[in-house]
Length: 214
Image (cartoon, rainbow, N blue to C red; front, side, top):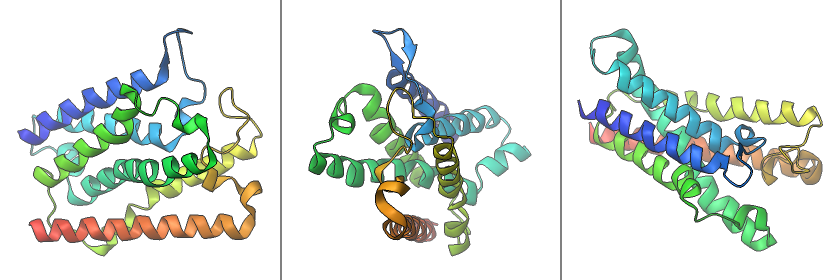
């Protein structure tokens, strides 16, 4: 019961956060290129997941609910949104401060920005800790969850190859550590390998926590 209630509550918060982040009241339109960024796609993914989980929760014996609440799916969704917070708070913002890049620093304390980077990720982790099934998690689950960031990586790189800038900016790449031409092959693959290794290690940590809690 609590899992279903928490799912519906998180879905509402995620929807409000995305709306506040995307909508430009002065222009009465949505931000161009909004869903090119992993942050927004991961929040949208969580919104859809939580809606489906909450809607199917009235039938706990149903196949959809059992799959959505299964340990492997639950930990993958949790990691998917939690890395949004980690990368933003500990990589992107410190890097932007060093570069003096106002495009990342401006509006970071707005309600929508706080929702998508802090509130929604935090609530999903809390939901996982308190109510999600964590039995039977293995290192294999930590590896399988990497499909999600790899899919985003492929999307971002293929999109950049079109040569179409993101929104009204002049950027082809959504994040500095994906800017292949600027970084060069060696630094680019070093960053990608390091990020994936960190994601795998984080997955192993969550698997360990899940095993300890069950």
